[in-house]
Amino acid sequence: MTDLPERRLLLVHAHPDDESINNGATMARYAAEGARVTLVTCTLGEEGEVIPPSLAHLAPGGEPTGALSALGAHREGELTAAMRELGVTDHRLLGGRGRFRDSGMMGFPQNDREDAFWGADVDTAAADLVEVVRSVRPQVLVTYDPHGGYGHPDHIQAHRVATRAAELAADAAFRPALGDPHTIAKVYWNRVPRSAAEEGFARLRASGPEFEGVADIEDIPGVVDDGEITAEIDGTAYAAHKAAAMRAHETQIVVDGAFFALSNGLGQPLFTTEYYQLVGGASGADAGARETDLFAGVGV
Image 1 (spheres, rainbow, N blue to C red):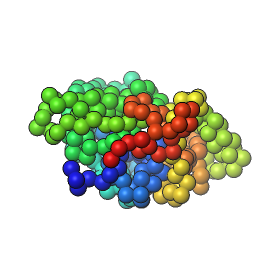
Image 2 (image 1 turned 180 degrees about the horizontal axis):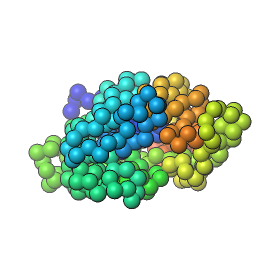
Image 3 (image 1 turned 180 degrees about the vertical axis):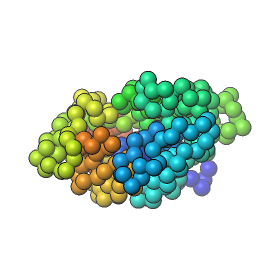
């Protein structure tokens, strides 16, 4: 594996746009520093609400099982454009294009579709990710917490699949044809410290960008007490890259300076320092201190 860069980061996300909102600055920073940044997106976000009236024709239309929707195809293009803005060249769809479909929110009938990601067998989906893990051999994995950050079925399933894939990839007895076993040294969950969220919302209210209203801090995925944060990645030098990547997801996001809104039109802060909780592996920081590098303590 001598052709692999010394540092290798794998991120697993549910839909196009999740990666830019949660990790855009982190991804841009590590890509610029020469790390291999690999993004695996589990669905094409076929059930997303479309914001621009000019693209309203892309709205979900009940496509049959196995059919690629117009919105899914468009969002794939948005994802490619976003990765270009972040400098990320290795981005993949779990199991290939159209393998798993966006499930919609909890309780929606779309969750019962045969091809919905929410209903996929976890080990079957994880095997697709194991192949990526054994090929890329990342030292660091970033994904969601067991609640998916805010309870979306696909986010919860992405957590399950990523967690299971990390286990299976290290097991030499599991599907040896998928490659040599590999143990991921560190696993992180996406987080936002409550103090940073409160400060961001204070700036939002003081600045008054032209959104329909202001989101509730409790609706922001991954907000936790500050004490749960173990790592913070300063991506302020890549703020423009993150904002540009988010703008590339034009069906889903409206960016206004240091703030953005989703289809509900409610403003929220755009974070350029991004936060994580280490849940697997050893911290590379001193006791009681936050890591400032996800690769801290990792041997090459």
